[in-house]
Image (cartoon, rainbow, N blue to C red; front, side, top):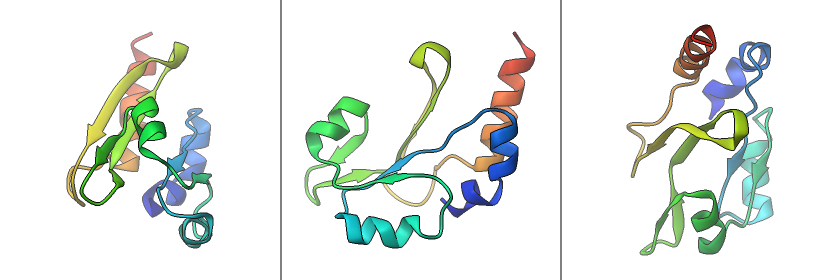
Length: 105
C-alpha cells in the first residue's frame, strides 16, 4: 500500500481516491494507516466483505487482497483478487490505465 502513498500527487492529479479496508481492530489498522495518506477501514466482517465484493477466506476469517477500480456511475472497471503478495495492482499501472481510459473518451 505504500506504493499508493508514494505517488499520491499523481493519483490526485487524475482524480483517483484510494481507500483500504482491514479485518483488524482499530488499533492494528491504525498501525498500518499511520504510514499512509489515505483512509483505512477496520473491523471488516464477512457481511461487509460480501457487500463490497471482496474475497473472504473462511479458514482465517480474513479478506484476501481484493482490489477494485471504480469509475463513473460506481461501475467496476477493473478488479484484482489474490491469495498472497503476488498479483496485486501496482499504483503506477493504475495511473496508466486511468490515463488510457480517459484518453478514449
